[in-house]
Length: 103
Length: 406
Figure 1: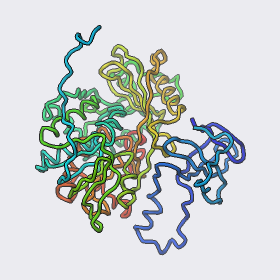
Figure 2: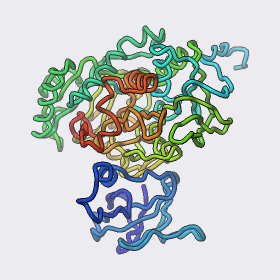
Figure 3: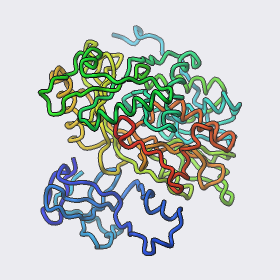
Figure 4: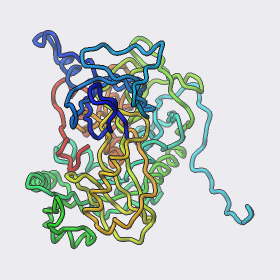
């Protein structure tokens, strides 16, 4: 089970959270201009990264707030937890290890 | 005991050839689907100068990790057609492959626990019958007669209100299925190349002309991807995207028991599916872990949840023990239906998106994918399962309609 550090509540069991899939997928700016191919991309296509993946989680049984997480999809190591609206952390130089991060 | 007393090692069922410098077609993925595809390419289309590339050992991915359930009681016409075709092939394959892989048509029961379940189930039985799929609706007493160890009393949280039943469904020995296909492929001249990892593709413009591997570059006219959970990784190497998400799917077995469970029981609502393997272990599975993952393992609370469901439905299982749990990587689509067809790259074809239900589809995946690769156009059965459906909107939405959640 993952031990996830909620930015508001601290480390909690995975069972308190729900998964929201890939993070940073913006609603199309001009929806009326999209063709079928572009709509398909927005609705059905998501990255399926093997490695570090930015994803959304919600603390359903805690603060009920959404947040973002950077997690390795092979080792399941949580690399970073950050707030909605913040950019994806750059891990190229340093490994960010939040309190309570777990395999 | 000394080594002298051990029996002779049996002959290998297939060769381990070095890759040639070129093939007419290369299949990426040496699991059930890849091997079945190679088999039908050789048998139905006369293509024997082909290779199956497997990065690990033969059938060591989801083919070694599934719960071996075979059924065809899907709701929608397109699904019923392809899964029922697969079931008909399962019925003749042991003879055709000259290998008894213990296909046991012991029936599959899908339990209903709510009024919504009951209505959905009866509707699905009707739809199945119209599509020539054997199906019946059982009341709780009939459920009990078929599977006496099931608790049908109303002292549980979600009492059994009935079930759909497909008598021709069942289980098979998954490893033996792979070995049966592999042996026949080998006999027909197909090269099965293990420990051969694909690391990239060679393209001439938008046309694939070769495969880069850890054992050198292999030229080929056609490439078929049959890599399940790793399909997105391969597609990215080839320069296109697939609408799939890879998730861990876990299963477990108990220690060996006397035969107590005569059929296969699946419950979507309390979410567990259970059968008893030929050897005697109880085999259980349920839904995927919620997060994306390539780790071939998942979280323990998922196992705990499916065992709780199993013990509620089968009180005698409370005395059994978990012997082993494991995970595979399943490639899920948004409509819980597979993708079999062409790709944006010329001469490259894809068979993926089978999610949690790929084992039962193995023969039909092989048949239709081989047809697609050999002729460049889909077979009648896989036409609806093209990648384009996500653009046209012609989805085959088996979520909640396929008897169990995928």
